[in-house]
Length: 215
Length: 215
DNA sequence: CCTACCGATCGGTAGG
DNA sequence: CCTACCGATCGGTAGG
Image 1 (cartoon, each protein chain N blue to C red):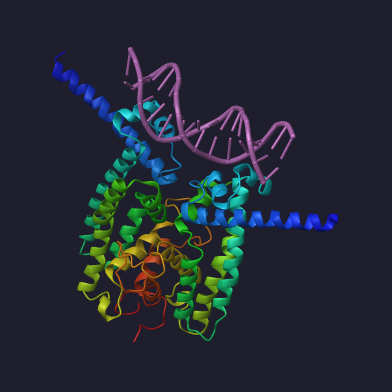
Image 2 (cartoon, rainbow over the protein chains, first blue to last red):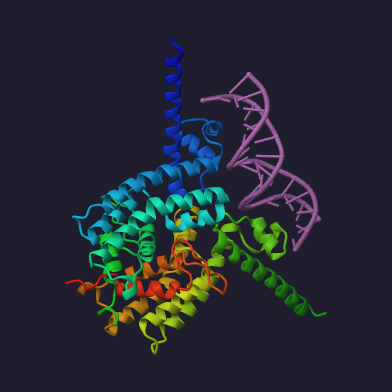
């Protein structure tokens, strides 16, 4: 067998294993958080022995950062696509954003900020902050900026809400939504059966609660 | 020395130690989360040896629950007092709530929900959910209900926001506010120097972002 | 309220 | 990509 072919096959197997590890790590880290996930849990979930993780990644934190990076890149594509759908109005686009975040980026904002502050080294912190800004914050913020531009949202210097603050509110509100899917009519502390939390949250953020506008 | 006096002194010392442990545990658990705090960290911070924790509390989780219970009780007193200040309007009362939460209950909602879901046994989960509902959610919700009653907020059956959802949004928005106090002009991803995040968040939630009200 | 210590598990490495 | 294993640290206990 020619050397090139053997190498190629080997590289492909190795790459598949790497992807399996990343996929398992993503599910676990997003669901349980950095600290609660052990390297052995990742190994078991991806069908390899634990020391093999250290062949593909320098350490646990490097694996975590790579998971965040892959997820952020996918997030950026999806959110920028939603933001560009100018034929849909602002509430519709925001509902799409929230539904996407609920489906895929099931990470809790509070957990994310906590890990940035306490669990990660400065280098990882910087890298993740940058990913977060460009892949998640920026696309969502552009929707709010667009809303101001078309006159649907009040400008921040006329009693409106700064797009950055609006993004903060939306991301926090999206963080603890009940799980999606049929049969998950989880009537919890917050949510009534039969209501769509996504629509309710978006309407609340856009139209507020007061009977009249300020001034 | 009479037996009663000796006993009393001993009980007092023991009670002081117990309180010192609780105080240290509260600071640590609120700042770092249940999992990231070790029993040795609590012991060091309260000036006792680690095994002594197990004389005053059954285990780490019992200590955590007691911290939550004490904090929730104080929270209930403070929030009910704020809710009862009918001479102040709704936005003023909500600002007081957020400032109180930022000062004392510096716990992140996302972290709290995560711990309820993943780190605690069912019994502790039930107890904490009950505390959370009665001591934090209920008082805040009553302010929103009051706002509807006096005609300042739209009723939920007339395009308004249900008080429960409003409470959810406020608590999530309050969770990741920058630290308080002078000199902490932390210009972060979200907050500009010189702006008061509390006032901005409350105004955003009450008046929304749109140029006109729905329908 | 202490010293001494337990078994379990962690992230990571040696050596092949 | 594996087996074997390391030092550190965890929550908790024994025994006084």
